[in-house]
Image (cartoon, rainbow, N blue to C red; front, top):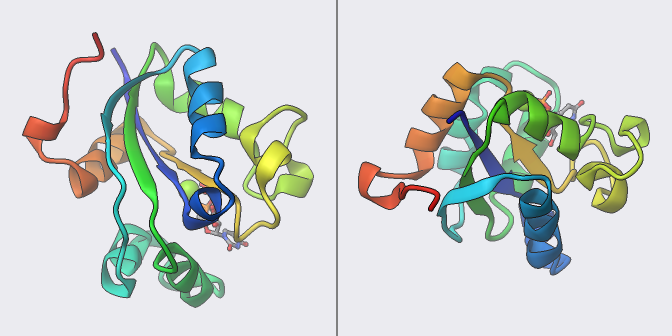
Length: 140
Ligand code: UDP
Ligand code: MG
């Protein structure tokens, strides 16, 4: 079964939307195989988003992602990576499709509630960033 890595970002936690977003994820057929609440430092947030290091928004992104607790999860489903990107919507909520997580809850392109891996390969790298093998439990 394919896996993807998501993070309920600090704005999601601050807005008390953890439950609402997980409900939407489960109703879309994803199973939670790993989950924790944690807080990234500027260093670990910068490492997670290292691919964006040269982008103009990198500093703001690191500030935001380390501004409060977040909830990373590993999710499992057939075609998980692509199907999850579909339910979260476009990076900019103004461009996100109706009913997507970002359209429903996000304030801006920067503070956009949720992360989703962009490939199966990156999903594996990102899952290992947050979770040890013992923390990854079969879906059911
Ligand atoms: N981001 C931003 N401004 C931009 C593009 C991205 O602040 O112009 C932030 C936003 O939080 C986004 C993250 O950087 O979710 C990673 O960007 P990416 O292009 O990978 O978007 P995603 O894969 O999250 O849709
Ligand atoms: Mg991305």
